[in-house]
Amino acid sequence: MSDLRLAARTARIAPFQVMELVKRAVLLEQQGRPIIHLSIGEPDFTAPEPVVAALERAARAGRTQYTSATGLPALREAISRDYRYRYGVDVDPGRIVVTAGASAALSLACCALVDVGDEVLVTDPSYPCNRHFVAAFDGVARTVPVFADTRFQMTEALLAANWGPKVRGALLASPANPTGTSIPFDELGRIVAAARARGGFTIVDEIYLGLSYEGRARTALELGDDVVVVNSFSKYFHMTGWRLGWLVVPPSTAATFEKLSQNLYICASTLAQHAALGCFEPDALAEFERRRLAFRDRRDFIVPAMRALGFDVPVMPDGAFYAWLDCTRFGDSGVLASRLLEEASVSLVPGHDFGANEPGRWMRLSYATERAKLEEAVHRIGRCLAG
Image (cartoon, rainbow, N blue to C red; front, side):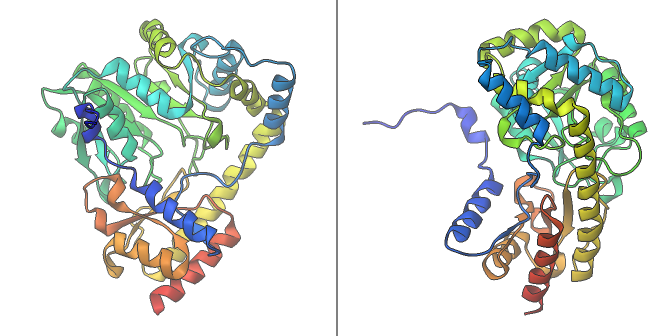
């Protein structure tokens, strides 16, 4: 039998190396090794009791039928109220599209906005799947190297310098994976205005916006109803495996996004949607705030601790649960990650997944694990490097 011919676009999508390293760590764990996972971007917290109770009520009541493609009206209204409560922004629920995680939201956004050959500006480093969402719809992710001087983020000047005749828009994240840094809001406003002036779009991934640690968090929705915003129940709301997210889209495009969602996804998980209504109950919101402060405490421990071990952390992360470590003193990040996993039983991620901008120099550390494990990880890493 002959091999099945695959579409050419599949060759433009690289393997997700983080997951390969995690598989190795899990295998060692299954063999009895006490692995400390500082690799995966997944909170160790799980859904709080109001969410679990809402799931149980929905399941027992048989609320398992398809919802509309844009999501439960009650959930869209709850998300709209949350924008008003937390960010002081009025968002019409008709602009909100509930999706099967932020990944589905980003896929829908690229499907709607990217034509064949269109270029989309993304930073390097950045979340690797963002490049592949663009490639999946036959666009080209045009990477913009960013450094500590811009907090590893896009600026208006960088956007202008890299905008060319094929560029259609920009896909940004604030706070960002893998660096944990945000775009200063006034700078984000200039970026959006610059893209708008060129007839381009701006997609802003805000899945970590709720996990901001310095000052009042502000959503890009303040900057105009033409900005496309992506968010998720995975990070701040601690519902990773429930696969639930949302988009906020320009009013003129809502019908198009609904049509695409109908055809590509039918709808997000009905039970997960009913459960997510519990996220907006007062007890749940209070618990999420306590957990945000716990993440901030972990950051305030782990960054100085890694600096004390000899890693350079040139920019203090102000959101998410990542630190971007310069491991130049210890050699290539891929080699070091393997050494730490095998010798110290600590799993970190080398920079190679996140772009081509000096990947051997950088490592991502996720502090989405309890403080005691972070302290033990620091001890193990120190002992390994000293040996």
